[in-house]
Amino acid sequence: MVPRAVARVNPLALDVEEGLGYGIYAYSPVLLLSLDFRMECIAQTRTILAASAMVFAATSAPSIGAPPDRFNALEAKLSNALASYDRSTLDRLWDDQLVFVFPNGTISRKAERLKAQMPPVGPISPKLVATNDSVKVEYEDAHLAVVIVRSSWKFGDAPAEPFVATHVWIRRPETWRLISASVAEVRPPKPAQ
Image (cartoon, rainbow, N blue to C red):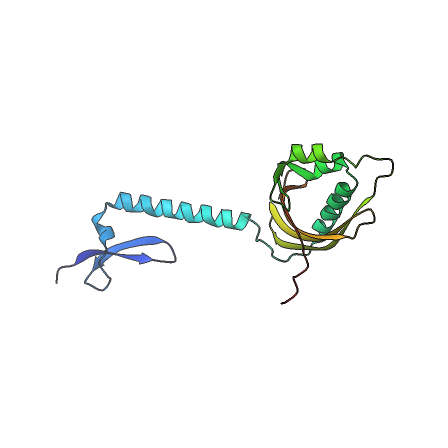
């Protein structure tokens, strides 16, 4: 039997070992390529794996169902600012890219929402009161958080109306900011017929 050059892959070293073999190792089409080309491919593979490992290690693992302490405070601040028509606080809490979806499907941006934040006009304007019934962090990582907020809004003597909102918070260099909000009115279930 004539010895033939064979290659075997060492999976731990991500390298190709060359040698003479007598059919002990499987023959590889890698041998059809030049040694320089194979070594360049191995070096590129190592670089890609090392870069992937660094990116994976650098990104924080997402936490689902994380304690909402940070977002309880942000959501309370947001609700209070909305109820008191506090434009300056809303301007700090809302990201410049804010997209707001009303319960009726109308879409608004930050500038439009800020402009609309005006208390009702009248000699005795009823007070708007907001209560966050629950705040649940559905997803959070170092850059983004998705929060579900169930709240009740009471305008004057009218009964409180329940709403649920999906808020997406984005981490900016200075603080967390609300970048997306979608609000739905919670309606009581219809009685069974």
